[in-house]
Every structure is written in C-alpha cells, then in structure tokens.
Length: 98
View 1 (tube, one colour):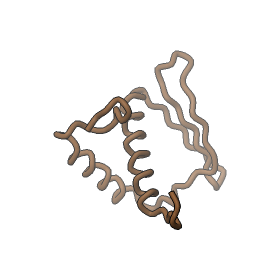
View 2 (tube, one colour; view 1 turned 60 degrees about the vertical axis):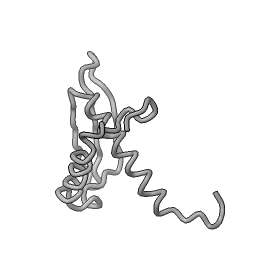
View 3 (cartoon, rainbow, N blue to C red; view 1 turned 135 degrees about the vertical axis):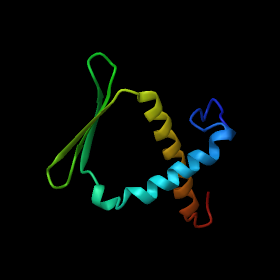
View 4 (tube, one colour; view 1 turned 60 degrees about the horizontal axis):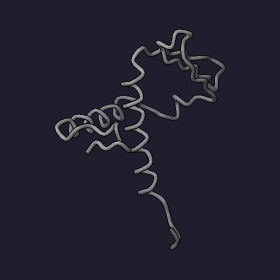
C-alpha cells in the first residue's frame, strides 16, 4: 500500500506484476559478482534533463549510462532498496538484542 513514507510501493492492482518483474530480473541478470563495479559517480546533465551514471569496472573499463526518466528510475530503485533491506533484516542475527 502506498503511503507518504513509501511512495514507491505499487498500488494493490500492480503488486503481483511488480513482484513478478523483480523475480524475472533476478533470473535474467546472471552473476551479480561478474557485474561488480569498483567505483561509481552519479550526476545530472547541465540542463537537469538526464540522470547519469559512470561505473568503473575492476578490469579498468568504464560503463556510462544516461536516463531521461529519473522519476521512474527512482521509483524502481526505492522499491528495490526496500526489498534489499527486508531481505537483509530477514537474515540478520540479533544475538538476543534489538
């Protein structure tokens, strides 16, 4: 359910599709370790119309990406970070303390 604190959560009618998209992505991505980057930069174009990424790979190569639709990207990133935190918390060992 979408709340002001979690504006990226899909409405109920799209929840199952969003979850399926995330599962499909994980299957199609391949090795996360093989796609590792050793550093990155994030910025914007001078006119503010593009969100840009510069990724340094461990082999010295560089990958550059520019996105014109930052709002959609941010929505996807927030949903993914939310899932990541839930998974990490689910695996956390509390050792008897909160």
